[in-house]
Structures are given as structure tokens and as C-alpha cells.
Length: 138
Ligand code: ATP
Image 1 (cartoon, rainbow, N blue to C red):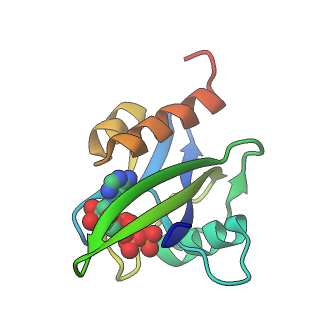
Image 2: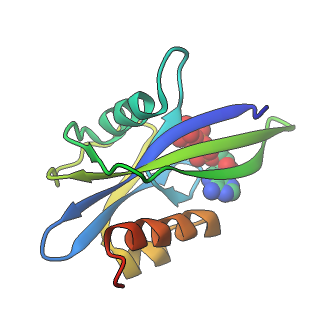
């Protein structure tokens, strides 16, 4: 049993070039929109709600067949928290973002820049898998 489960998505906009939405967390890291799954919610419902709350984006279209898990441990008030984050892949047409107090910034980045901006290796691996899923030829 993990201590915390969150859900979120690699949110992308497909203009001339595909760009990915990253959030700057107050703890300092850059990551995808995500948050705790609440009681009674499905993973998708939680991801949809978190994306809306954290970015204001309400039009997300999930790509069927992409569901990946990132696991990590972190220390919270001297306790080791075992965490699992379920990530989907979602397309939006909305570029305008309104972040909540939970974050200190956001960025739309192309693949190479998103790879540089993401803080954690497991998130970079996930972005690579997301790109592979939508553009298998790359
Ligand atoms: P949530 O958005 O799920 O509500 P949160 O904002 O409370 O989460 P996390 O983003 O999980 O918190 O960050 C909590 C701690 O875990 C931070 O110290 C962060 O540095 C670390 N952390 C976050 N993501 C990862 C990761 N992919 N790999 C390793 N450590 C991570």
C-alpha cells in the first residue's frame, strides 16, 4: 500500500509544433499537473479535476491506451511518504492558463525544452513515452 496516490496528465497542445504544459511547484520542481485522488473519484476524474483546478484548462481529451505510473518516496515532516502518481496523456486546445496558489509558474515547452525543464528523471522518461505514443516515428 502506498501512502499517497495522485493523478494527472501530460497535457499537450498540437499547434505547428507539439508543446507540453509544465508547472513550477512551490517546492522548486517542474512537473506535470497532478494531485491527490479523492475518495470516490476515478483516476481520470481526479486528473481532469486537478488539471482544471491547477491550470483552468477544462477541455482535455484523453488519449486511450496511455496510463503510466511514477513512484517515488519523499520526506514529509520526518516521515517517509511512499507515493504513486498515475499519469495520462491529454490533448487540449486551450493555451491560456491560470495557475492556482499551489504553483509559482507554468510553461508551454516543446519536447526538447520540456525535457530540460522537467526536474526528475522519471518524469523525463514519462514524457519520452508520451511522445513515442503520439509520434511513434520519432
Ligand atoms: P500533488 O501535486 O500530487 O498534490 P505535492 O505538490 O504535494 O503533490 P509532490 O509534487 O509529490 O507534492 O512533491 C513532494 C516531494 O516529492 C517534493 O519534495 C518533490 O521534490 C518530490 N518529488 C516530486 N516528484 C518527484 C519525482 N517524480 N521523483 C522524485 N521525487 C519527486
